Image: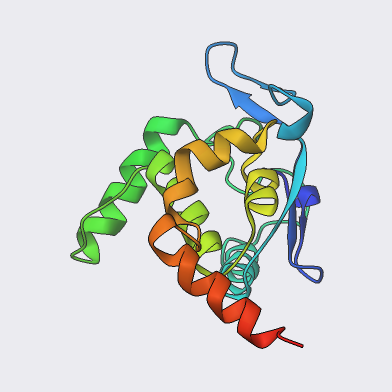
Length: 157
């Protein structure tokens, strides 16, 4: 992530590239859907603003640069820092992939529809989102009758 990809006022983050560890370069996302803009919740916006101030970052370049300042922080260094943070907080840690699943689950719990969640995750086909997270969306089979009854009662003429 580069600071240029973050808009703290609009509370958005543009995903325009990803890090390819083998080639040690930034590359285009795997699909057109991989290029996307996702919302930044207020809590994260505050943390990012604090990060910029506390680390005296310019508002250009990488959000989390590696030691050379040119390449992103190495994944193992990031994993080590995250693990230390979890331990210091006396919490069971999760990895980056689990964080992605958590974000998707929270979007669904907050009421986002499948198409929106699919877009935020960068899935080229919403069926992927539904296959992985479908059980979390409201309206599961056991709720369907009650939902339909309530709808029809509310719209009964």
